[in-house]
Amino acid sequence: MDRIRIRGGQSLNGTIEISGAKNSALKLMAACLLTDGELSLSRSPRLADSRFLGQLLAHLGVEVEEQAGSRLRMHAANISDPFAPYDLVRKMRASFNVLGPLIAREGKAKVSLPGGCAIGARPVNLHLEALEALGAEIELEEGYVHATAPKGGLQGGRVVFPFVSVGATEHAMLAAVLAKGETVLENCAREPEIADLAGCLNAMGAKIEGAGEAVIRIQGVDRLNGTDWAVVPDRIETGTYAIAAAAAGGNVLLKDAIEDHNQALWRAMRLAGVEVEAESGGVRIKRSGPIKPVDIQTEPFPGFPTDTQAQFMALMTLADGASIIRETIFENRFMHVPELSRLGADIQVRGNEAVVRGPSKLKGAPVMATDLRASVSLVIAGLAAEGDTIVNRIYHLDRGFERLEAKLSACGADIIRESE
Ligand code: EPZ
Image (cartoon, rainbow, N blue to C red; front, side, top):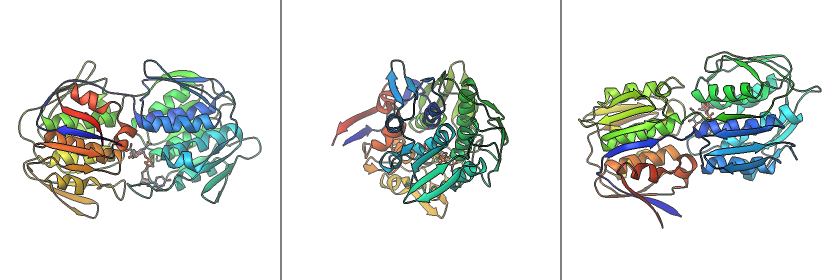
């Protein structure tokens, strides 16, 4: 297995091009099941996760083709069998999102339950309740969801989410676009990926209003057509490289980054003494002075994203003083703490709060992590540490970061991928 070796101490200077958002691309890919036309996604990130979903789509009968220029073409002329087996769903949780489109298009589906993962139990009850509100009959048997639409297909309905869920909001949208009549979704997630999915579905002929707001209204249509869609730039990749530049010091332009998608992070970074400026074509990050401690709490968008909590914690180990980091979205998202401690960080965890006492003089060491954002926080710490940090188990990084070593080394980082 490969690992990444980082020799810390180099500042980052230059331009990093931001890829398409993994968490948007995965839902856009599921949308291809809703039409017998072609869906072509540009700025599609080449990641292990999108390949896993591509394999599942191919299993369902979809033609999937990676084309030049980060383009992904998908054509679901026919669904061979609306069955998503455990082996293909377990590799990547977002595969579960094929359930709604399959019921909407085929009237029935059998899809494996995704199971928990390292960051928490991650149940799918809200997804299933939303599909039931559209008339689907759901039975759970031997780890599989067996779902059937009523005669005549899914019916519009009202769903009031008891709390905000990105995946359940998207899943409900993916099913409701082909349901008969109006669907109203309340207390929806407002992440930019939701608006991206709605934009693509509308370009396919759907009628969705309010995506990006708490209430989404969908008028069902009889059929959708194919389209060309550009995946939104990845706000989590943006935030990650912004924090990397802050930790290492330097001056980096994050090309194609959308400033507005990371306001909570920018606020925290500015308080920490980092310069963040929107400029034409992206967002510029500069840091030369000391890093100040800042308390953060993760929240649904537009709050501070859980997907940059680990990276921000790595930055706070360098800050001059104590900061408190509270994780409110997932119950087990501090796996990076013992690994950051191996690099010399002083962090104490109490329940969902971590107290980080800086500034630590980080020293390189072998480390590994069990999810992708935790892994990349170790890369960030490694950039700021003295000596060599070796990040093992990098398949986690490959799931969510496109050409990570190439992007960082082009800005002066001393980082290579090597075989164990
Ligand atoms: C999405 O996960 C992202 N994944 C996550 O990114 C991200 O951390 C998360 O949203 C929050 O922003 C993808 O988009 C593929 P949720 P999702 O449903 O949709 C609970 C990464 O690193 N919940 O908003 O699964 C759930 O357990 C990943 O790229 C239920 O209880 O997140 C969590 O505590 C990690 N029942 C909370 O809601 C449900 O039916 C919010 O989860 C659904 C969720």
